[in-house]
Image 1 (cartoon, rainbow, N blue to C red):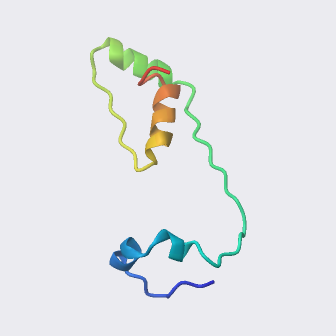
Image 2: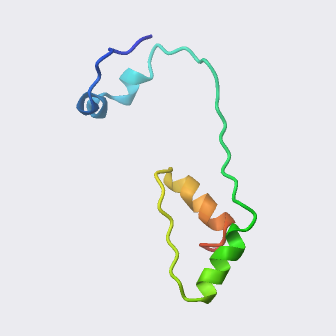
Length: 77
């Protein structure tokens, strides 16, 4: 089903999930993978040893950010 063409940000924020997710047709599935560069954990370790604070800035989902932070050693497993 098509949604109205001129949905504003405000309208989208106020539409209920039940309304949006009804009468839909499954078209496909996308799987995304977050791969670190091989050198990332070592670089972060060097920064930590040099007492340089590292932070992660992301627009990703919180669970994705936690997973990446664990993979590169920013937080314990």
